[in-house]
Image (tube, rainbow, N blue to C red):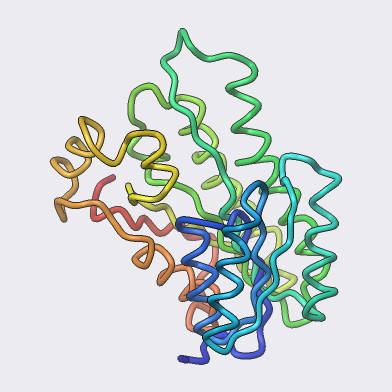
Length: 250
């Protein structure tokens, strides 16, 4: 263990699989006790917790659908009950759905904004309440789409542009309370979600690889590493940043 986060408590939303699961594992490897939030996959969350415990860490799985405000407070309170504090929040939970302009509906809009933007704000609000006098670190998982802006992604890209803006606003707003707020904006990473959407092969992936300077997609570990850095005291003088982990694609 590197011990960068020894004695810290972290909450990772949407951590039952993909990028969120790897972030939880790496935070634990750095010494943090981790609350693994999940919405639908208890099995996945339990698997992440079991791996952390097997490796000598501390973790607990906590269910909450962050699009439901009444469940958000319970999530943060359960984290504090489990570990006695909260020092790091990683807002990773999110959904994406692509649609051309003529296919956009109120349901398509609200499904993404209610979780990706409102859910993120509500969890941050609750976490900020219980961060101690030493402050804390919030890391928002945004997306490279906020600047790449691919066609047929108006609503999803808008949610992530909102996350970038919120990151900068809250960095200023929460700085007097010693709470740092940064974002990590991943490029394409082949996760379960990307595979189920069919983006892991075909025109989308080919376009990404052809236009990305490093000429490949990323891995979950390459996203989680920067998150651990931003959560730790190594990044003590960094706030309000959006770190694009996209292989150079902007």
